[in-house]
Picture 1 (cartoon, rainbow, N blue to C red):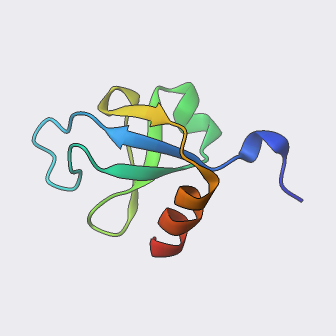
Picture 2 (spheres, rainbow, N blue to C red):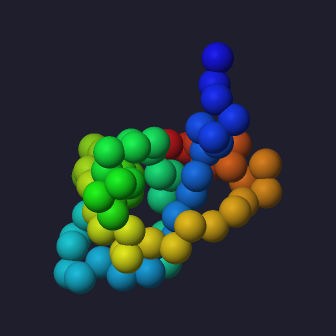
Length: 76
């Protein structure tokens, strides 16, 4: 059973500091990782297809309409 606070989150990449595995202006799904978030990081699946930790400052959390969330999650 999913907890209420386990809602799917999405973030817009606003900077990548020359990291080739992130695209600026692209939306990424944030994978829940409590320890990473406590240390100031988001876990996302980047362009390599693997999930990695990146500084929260690289992203802006955004709210998407439910239908958009479904489409992005299905494409991942």
